Length: 455
Ligand code: PFF
View: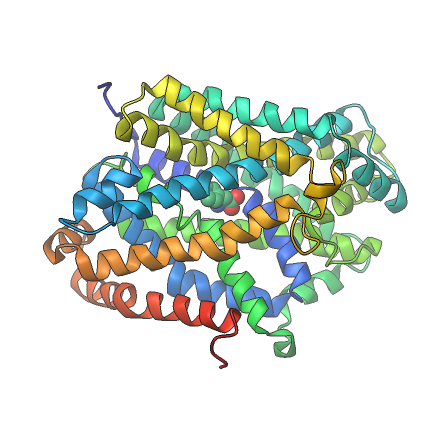
């Protein structure tokens, strides 16, 4: 078998893993979820989920991945002498394929907007941009071609391998993304009435809190951290023995949350300023932002165009670092678990995701059946709901049960404590959280959402 490879540098580890976490989840999904769930109250619950469930869950996946140094399915199986625990890995592979399928559709929209900004097609008034979005997204051909393009782009990076492909790409893409985001936040916050958007983001109105807000915040936290798909477990299998798992998990959660807040600061001041409804759903950034670029730079339209090009370029890059990580879960699985050569394994992953991606792309009006797939929700919305709100929390729930109760305590402790002082205290808190707090909280949120219990 070919050498598995590993990340070359410490910063490479952080950037590649943060590159997986930071993506459309932060810049596209977080703002529209916040908008649909009433603003600051959603964000407050989201942070509680990150702190209480997210960080301990990330460390748990890191422990499993680094210890076994192999693909997700075998990683779980190797750590347990008996029991069907390898299925958690299989579930992760399945979940990540569905996510990659619908994620590539939105990433494809970004590519379309990138080219539309290059040809100055999308500058204009609110009504025009809304119309442009509707016509483009319901076209059967164009967005589907962009979806396929994006999956192929991901494919070519992944087949180049971990160090040459994933790590090198992340080292360049992540810092570029951050700088561009800050520039647009400043532009958005300088629009008239921007303060209303800032209030919407930070002034908590607890009357907005409901069980569906909590459920959505939980799903968003898992989606954003790439938690529950065994993605982090797969990446951790490329970490070396010296990587400090705890510090890496905390830094990644901080970067991820910070970028999400920046995305909120980029969208909401602008949405309130131009009068776009904050709860307009998945189209939010595709309708709000072209107007920001147009209005802020109305005196110098070329500048508006340049910023627009940069933004959609940035978003495509952020999406790419995430799709790479999703693709790698399946590719490593086919290669190591099913013994299919890496290149062919990558082709299978690509083909399956393309089929899901095409169906999702046609669910925005091009095909009636897919557009109203279940309870008037589009096929894409159903894939998103199934993965974010159900499969990801379940994946993490089983990971915590597995690691907390069934894996040898010595292995877990050794993996956790390869760093400085205070480690024993932290270990005690973390393992308690993984054994009790995470599974109980996830179970309660699930039972409450299903209407089985009332709290
Ligand atoms: N965390 C990514 C984002 O926020 O865009 C999405 C994601 C990546 C989810 C990888 C799941 C995954 F395995």
